[in-house]
Length: 306
Image (cartoon, rainbow, N blue to C red; front, side, top):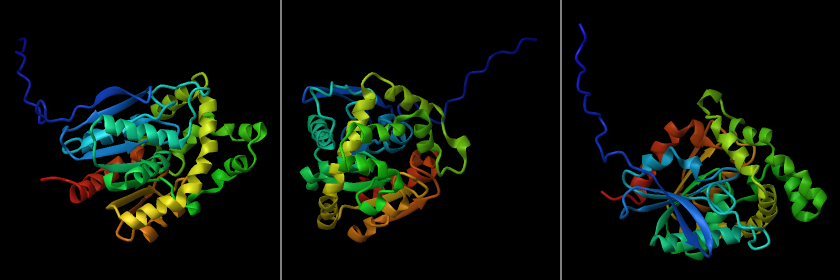
């Protein structure tokens, strides 16, 4: 006897309850900036700034977990992800220019105040943004984002040599950073359970880095990172003077930005909430289940609305 198909049961997640991420592009200063956006338009804003060598896609799992209550915005920097990659002859790939573009983006989106999530390259970009309008930063989430010279590990030694001696030889000496094996290592180093890592992540990054002209864009940015170190004292003064509510959540096994760069935040932000996780650089890849509740709870207590 043929059975009669049963009507599917109603899902525990009703239509409209699960936040939808929108994928948009805005033209800022003549450059197309791609960004992901989710959450209520009138919710407190959270700006997620990505690192090297990835893009806003690194926040793909975190965004819907925050978007129940918050307006979450995650852009791609020029030369990354789906944002434009203007020719180096017409655009200088610098962190100052990245900050200007991010400032223009949030202005265009009508964001007056925002919680700032700083990771890797997102840290110097975000802190430059904060210097432009410190009163706009409602809270700070720091995830393996450096602002102290103590946090520059041995990984940075050949890059420092390039800062001191801007020659083609020094430039090519750091090109190993762009190789697939180095990119993969940024994901795997310090991670205890590799089965938690999605291998599509480093494959996606490799495709981005292989685009015509992208290698030189990335090497330009590694050179310009030296300008961030010069600004570290100003970033630290922002922390001391404005004391934004701060959550530091850091992968302590990160070979690029080790835990030595996390601890100094406590000097300038004594009320900061501080968590070292037993993982590496991209902690949202394998410790999302630990970090996301911390981040959501912190936002609820610092900028959330009932």
